[in-house]
Length: 443
Ligand code: AMP
Image (cartoon, protein in one colour):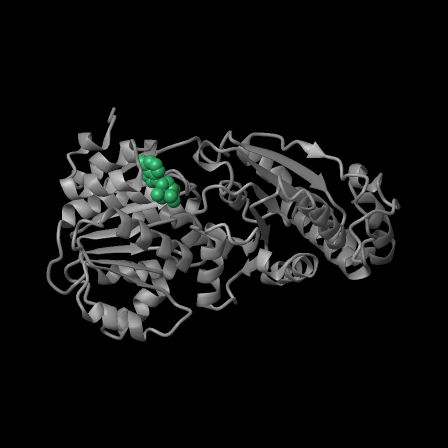
């Protein structure tokens, strides 16, 4: 077993940078992955964000590329999102500080001019999202002939985001002889498939039992009947400023993220809250993430995609304002808190249509998430007509997914069903509170 970074026989430049970054010893994924990568093997690493997986492939790549050479890239690292790409570039900058290796990061959402200029200066490592990489390749700004390393980071997310055909296209245009590395938080069927297409006799290393949340994160669940009540509960929790001091609120969609953001901005100082999602301009997102990292803002509202790769170490609370549909995202989300052995709390708000996903999550993490009662001070709103319909429709879809013969109570017995559903689908816990007038209403 490798005990220290010296054991890898990394060069002095890298050891100095590691030392300055404050890494004392290799994390488990680094212990397992660095030696085989240095030995030239293809590798599949199953590791979540927060395990040190980036340095696990960046260090051996920096070691093997050694110094700036020629014009064309020798390593290509593909990331599903710009945020992760930026994070990877940052890690390369930290660890490659004492080398002269040149890294260019490429992602969409802004004009390619600067990126093209950077490429023209000569490059050793490209970190890119697949779409922008292909665009610039097809426009002949990139030559792939010198590529020796190809990395797919967060391969599961790439598959979820539908990048499979772009990845295949990229595999067609890179030299055959190269070293391939694939990292993924989970091992889905699609990841398995792409790994088969991509890796030759790979070494497989895995850390942590798949999808096990860190023990430093305490989890809890509130059954909340509707969106407005979720907002009231959020407001109630956030009155405890000392405890809830650095929070990420996760939403499934941009629309809900914007709603939650507008609600919070009305309650708190505008400087305390930011929102990030795919429609936000690139600079806004970068600034928001930076401000949040530096502690300048208290609450960050985010969608899953926007928060990918976001590395913030001491988040006090992760609030799942909506339960994620891609259930592995639950583990990713709550991994933002309780990092670096600090304790953190992950709180999930679940409406009747989301109970289905909570059950799947509990199966995945092999834990029951402890349920908490909605505090008496929180006003329980009535579920509006549209939301009631949407919830009923969603529950019908879930039943149909589980049982294809299910006819769909919603469509057939719409009127009577709506009535029944509005009471039946409220969990007993949340229903018991209805009617009590509390804080949480907009003043
Ligand atoms: P990652 O899983 O690559 O997103 O890394 C998560 C965080 O762990 C990043 O902030 C890294 O800088 C940090 N990190 C990586 N390797 C180590 C290490 N050996 N010791 C301490 N921190 C590390």
